Length: 202
Figure (tube, rainbow, N blue to C red):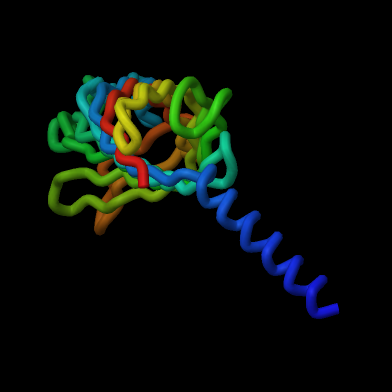
């Protein structure tokens, strides 16, 4: 009886060791370029533009098995929101667009190389850089694909393309803090991002 119990413990220990070997973790720091769909100003019907520009991201991945990982993603862009339909006081509004998502990826081969698909759910923080305005927090998701090129045991280059969807819930006043800067009409904000980064595996 005791020997059978001991054998089960040994088998479980061997399983844990094997899982830890195959379930690799990594951290990736990336830079890239992000573009955006437009919005509509509710009172004038004119389009509101978010400038395309550089951004950066950090992804922390935790191994599940040989081909899958959990992922925590933070992605940031500083852009400018502008429209001919906005009041001069609200035009050319500098805006930080941040994503904080939890999700995962699935490699076609194994987690240390090759192509993969990725996705996640979380929130978008829209933070205007102007006194008297407030931060908006909205639900969002991302989907994308990428490719990891390994260099030795612990390093790699990671290339990604991601699309983001932020749910706005129709017409809404935004960036209100004692007054509202913008009234928009629309259900979602769409953004697309291309990234290249360095991956450290551990």
